[in-house]
Structure formats: C-alpha cells, structure tokens
Amino acid sequence: MNYEQAINFFHSFDRFGVQPGLDRVCALSAFLGNPQKDLSFIHVAGTNGKGSTSTMLSEVFRAAGYTVGLYTSPYVLCFRERMQVNGKMISEDELSSLAATVKNAVVQCNENNIFPTEFEVVTAAAFAYFKQKNCDIVILEVGLGGRFDATNIIEHPECSVITSISFDHVGVLGDTLEKIAGEKAGIIKNGVPVVTSENQPEAVLSVIKDDAQAKNTAVHLAHGSLPVVSETLGGTKVNWDGYELTVPFAGAHMVENACLAIKTLTLCAEKWHISQRHIVDGIAAARIPARLERLCEKPLIILDGSHNDGSTKALAEVLKKNLDGKKILALMGMMADKEVDKALSNLLPCFAHVLTVTPSNPRAITTCELAEKIRTFGASAEAASSIDHAIDTALERLGNFDALVICGSLYLAADVREKFIYHIDKLSKNQ
Image (cartoon, rainbow, N blue to C red):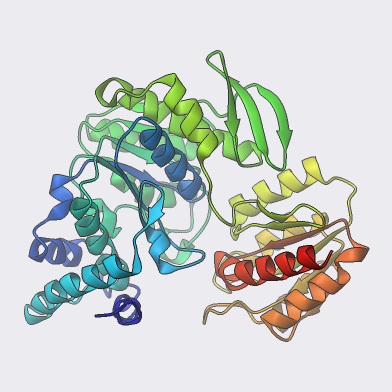
C-alpha cells in the first residue's frame, strides 16, 4: 500500500457510528493486539483549547527527555499531523505500512459483522503506531465528546484533563452545558486525577465534580490566569512560581490553557521527573498552526481556526486588545451546522469588511448564504466565487486595511494556509 492508498483507506469509512459505543474500537484494537494497554496516556477532552493544551503538554515531556506521542484532530495541513512523535509527523512510509496492518484488522472485524468508523480506525492505528515507536507517554486528544469517543478505551491514564467547555456539536452532545459537560466528563476514570480550570462555568464544574466523586477521584482546579508581564499578538509573558514563562499564543484563553498544562504537569512531576525548568522551556517551545497564527507581519495576516461561541469570543477579545481602532479585513468561511449566528455576533464588531468563501467541506455554508447572513447583522460583506478568488481579492485590498484576519473554520484554514504562505513568500521576494 502506498501513501495515497493509505490516505484513501482511512477516509473510506463512515465518519460516525450508527450507534454510540466503544464496542467497535475495542474489537478493532483487540485484533491489533491491544497496543493501548502497553502505553501511558494523558487524556484531554473539552470544547476549546484541547489542541494547544495537548501541544504544551507534549513539549514539556519532550523537554524532560521522554519519547512523546501526540494524537490530535482534526488536522490543518495534512493527515499525518494527527500522529506525531517528538514533534515529528508520522512519515508517508510509516503511514503506508501502518494502514496495511490496520486493514488486516479491519477485515477481521468485518468478518465478525463489526464495522468501525473512520475515527475509530484512525485512533486504533495511532495506538499501534505509538507502541511501535516505543513512546514513553502519549498525549491523547479526544475527538468528539468523551464518553463514547474512540480514545476512551484507554483504562488508566496518568491524568484526565478537561479544557474549557462551551456550546458545540449540540446535536450530538446535548443542548445544555450540563449535558455537554456530562459527555466530556465521561473520560474520568476511577482513581485517576482530574484537572480542569477554575474558570469553568459553575454548572460545568458541578457536573465534573459529581462525576469525579462517583469514581473516587479528586478534581484539581488550575488557576484561570497568571500575572501578566507583557502581551502581544506573539504571545503572553506571565509570572509563574518565580519564573517568567512565555505562553507563545496570544490571548487570556491561552494562558488558561497553559495553567491547565502546568497543573497537570505538577501532578505528574514526581513520577515523571519533570522540573520547573522543563515546564518553562517546553511551554515556550509549543507551536500549532491556525491558532492565532501570524502568517505575515507586514502586512499583518492572522489565521485562526475559531468556529464556535467560545473560541470566537476568545479571538474577538484578542483583536480588541491588540488591534483596537484598526481597520480589519476578514476572510470567513464556516460550517452550516455550527452556531453561525453566535460566532458572527462575536466577531463582526471587529471587522470593517468581510469576504466570504465556501470551505471545501460538504457541511459548509455557501459563500452567498454567509455573506447575506452577515449583512443581516448590519455588517459589510461580499461573496467570493472561489477560494482562489477570495485570496486574490484579500491580497489586492489589504493595502486599504491594517490587517487581514482569516477565521471561521479549521477547514477554511486548511484550504488557504499554504496558498497564503506561497503568495506571501512571492511578494517578499519581489520587494
């Protein structure tokens, strides 16, 4: 099996199971020899902040000298991002070999009338890969929810981390914060410490604490913030336990994510020999695409994958704090099944004009529908006919604005990131 065939193999399955449950992924992992049972994990669930928190955790364990697996979703640039060891994506050859192995296990499942979904297959494959690479620890990010997420077949992680919870995937997880929190808290295991933020809504904290109590474990609350030394679009310097710590992502929400990582790491510090210096160096080294990522400084171009109420509020706060009074052009594309109105009400006050586009996903709201919806908010918007048209138009108009912000969906980020980088490099060479 070559690389293209491997990618097609993983994408050939249904995205969601007909019925919730872990039976399918358990069966598939069993046919692979249950690799997850030979690995140590930190399990990370939540609505927003999973990716950045997981990345910071991964970098600190790396700084402490461990071989670290990182499993995330969705990817921004390419599928291989989802499985990383010590910051390096799985190679094309490794993915091809892994797919061939997993395919045999899937065939065995099918022979027993078991039909795993795409995420279940990818998760089982990741377990096999991390065992193959002899990972000391794996930072395991939940895909959706927690209770019935394929990652939840692990039995006794080092720690269960629950990041910020807000409304998202309400059709699957529930239409109240309590219901959503209940699904996320499903990752809590008997006797395994739980870390979450003191900034969680009280209703969310109540659900998490009740679940933890029922499973005979404690909830450890991370600080919601730290004293700020300085803050720019490049990140925030804070005081932590006598150290000046650099959180290399902008916004108070990213400091909160760093606090979650720090609390988790301090709980693991004795067993895993993690020092304060490891924490400072590891967090400062964290990088992740499409999280308030500055593609260019002059002109300023920011790419952010925010797409729900919580994450778009966080983006708006960063823009107001750092670009207040600036004239901002936006390029937006969104999924129709997201809370589009809430996201727009959060973001539109920040923008002078919006170019809309249809991301390359069947769930996307069309460029014309999004532009019309934006106009109902009294904002200025126009629909681009294609992604390339949107990029060309944004770059042509940018001279009349102070900044360009690209946001609304990680799918949009994946569509445009490399194209913008190409154009930026081309412009810099011609200057």
